[in-house]
Image (cartoon, rainbow, N blue to C red; front, side, top):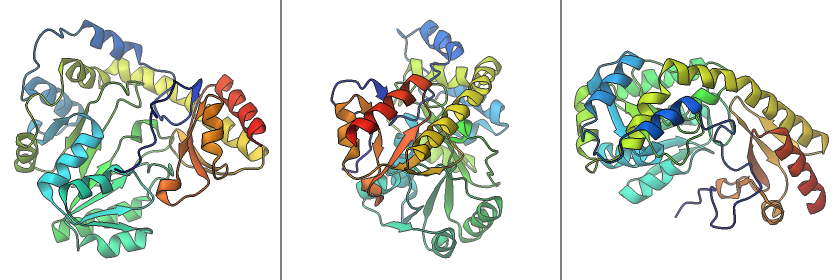
Length: 323
């Protein structure tokens, strides 16, 4: 079992910095649509109308769209269907490694862009998170173009995980020919709704991935969510929320640096801070939950998401008490 770092089974914290969901959510436009959904009926098992809707939004053929129960389920399905070895640029989202382990295929972790390019032609499937989790970093345009070129030449499936792209404060370079993975529930404040989708490079791959899913892999609420989040009104709400999220992130980074902590601020709605070994447990006892990164080889480092000012004040008090 790979440590995920989300809910821990204890009482709900007063302030949860471990979740990267938009704290201004849920998006009221999307929430109204989900509440109005007829949950007494099955969705279309092939999600035809939804796939047409998402295809029009992204300007791709409907056969390229694969609906799934969130990013994690789609990652596992990709590895199960397309096989390994699986290449990742570490530290990154742990579900890629977990999917490889569950499928019984080799996982090849590398630790620099140069290594990633060197290994790319020797695997079958590679993942790049844009922005990356937990660092918040965006891979540069030259690197991603070269990665896409090498993958296309070698027949490797390169997946861009864009879960945090809607929560980035810079444009996200995504080259042609890569698979694109979307998990919009975080951006719209709906982490309790497990829904996502893939855009693949051809209809044959899309059909293989769709046929490998269980029947009704997502329900009516999730189907409605995915359709509503791509609408003009929902996207306008998200665009209006982003400046506040980035302001809170900058304040969080500044306040921790002022307290003497080492901080790494990327382009997403979260930061990394070196708070010290064992501090996550001390903070949790004081009603603050953070994402401890020890499982990623980053001992003493925590990931903290952008949160409102009362949460930042609560964090500062708890840090002072934990010493």
